[in-house]
Image (tube, rainbow over the protein chains, first blue to last red):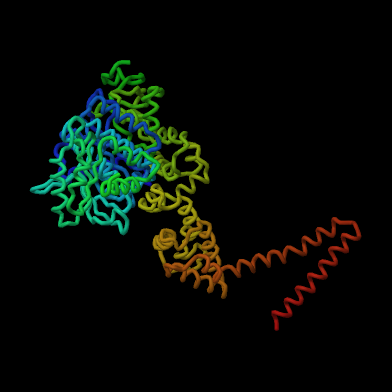
Length: 303
Length: 326
């Protein structure tokens, strides 16, 4: 244990931010504004990012409430949380970071100091990349929170990103699914979530790559056009992507799923998940894997 | 309370609201452990009910950026900063002399329970430097620490600062340094004694220190109390005859081989001689104890009990002697 860890952490995180090209002055104990009831350990005014540092997992939520009050005054403030990697195993702490939509720095303690182990843009990024598996109760709580974020999103960019993260989080909890990329784009296509599927045997095992496309459209229906575009993306993946999830927070045009199944001429399966079905995937008595399997069966043969 | 204007005449001796950014921490504060969760709890409490106890500062107008220096309340200061309080209630007192400052910081912090022993030792060191007092009795009068505790602290302060810092970080035990010094280093086994007895190991005191620190750091040793056995081994090696030579060989093996353990060295070099001295002490004392007992008991059957036990003991001892002489 480092006797007076915060100044040590401040120096390590500030160095990391500067080394990673953060523009503007990295200020230790910087003031966001006089009226803000929180003085972050590090504040970068140019990017409006405030950092909360922990050398040990906190044993209360007062820090989170303080930051929430600061966010109520400064809604555009971006939050970063740095803590030892082990601290993020604590679900309460992880959820707090997610509620604050914080970017994360995971630290490694070494003799007399800390070093940066890894950096993540968000909690879902951490969950997917570190292949964190939750028990069903925790998975439900974190997915509910992710859905809240997606439904509360205001700008188009925010709507897209939050829903992508929700879908990535959900698929990361399916047995043998490894989320490889979120929000990827190449010159011709944009894909929301790409999963490496390690399943051997069973209904999920016929596709080594699984793709998901998410539409945060509550006032607009997903039409056959989007379905056709998605099918093209699936089939252009060297025939390895034979399973895809087309997700919307709203609904599909009437009969789309049925028509798609009837018109299907190849072995590619598209699972249609609308806004009503989505929360049921994690909120039932079955596991997320069982619900996904069920949806895939329904998409192949009809319910 | 008004936000402060800082001229000495106006500020000293008053309770004021001072902007946090005008305050600097006291470099003489020997407390080095600031438990993050405790500061967070304090911050939450200040948010809820305010800051009930003012901090204490002195005015140092020569420092134009931060003209107030903390004397007491660094945790409150840090907690207030975290919740972005613009000002903090502070009692401004006259600037203490360096000696007064050191003793004051010491006494303030000794009232707190969660001070680590190594921090107390560092604070004591500071007092010794500021006051030039090294006498344990006088230091006891000044600080209220027991003479034994002061003596142990002085032992620990003899170690290199890097070793002391390991204690502060929890990588070495404070009591291990005390026992190491008490049982080994202060016996100076690498030097000729005042009575002219030759060194029993060919290592300097600092080399010996490093050898034993390494054994504990690398997990070859774990029990601190075992260091007392090395003290016995040194004393035995300082003696005469074959026993001393055996002890010296065991000691040399212990300090030159990184994996050699105290337990092995003690068994080879000192255990039998320690047992011998215990048995001799018991045998020498036994006749006197029996005489005293016989002088006090009057009952015939009790006297017979003693006589019977003695006869049996003499027979057993004679048998043991006969066996060993064969």
